[in-house]
Image (tube, rainbow, N blue to C red; front, top):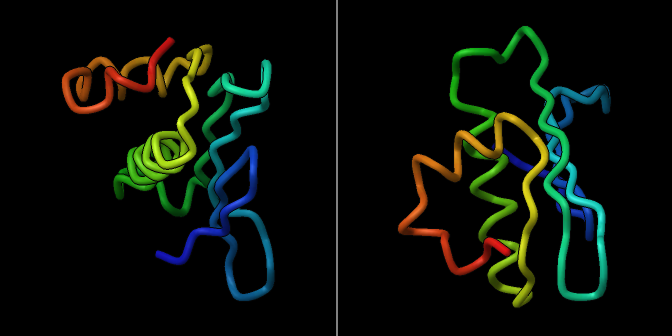
Length: 91
């Protein structure tokens, strides 16, 4: 999957530039973001896309030395399952 990376979101678009999936993480301050929303189009549900998006966000934040606060219910569950691997980026 070819995700589109931005400073506060990662998204997946189809060939016609329609949004198919996205995770958003707006800045709280210069070192902290809030992972606040995960969206996956019905056509992609059940394929692990949301997990791949949140993992991509976690890796991007780690590479930038940022911490995350979680308010998205999906992200909370994902990080709970991957706590040991990504606990260093949680605030």
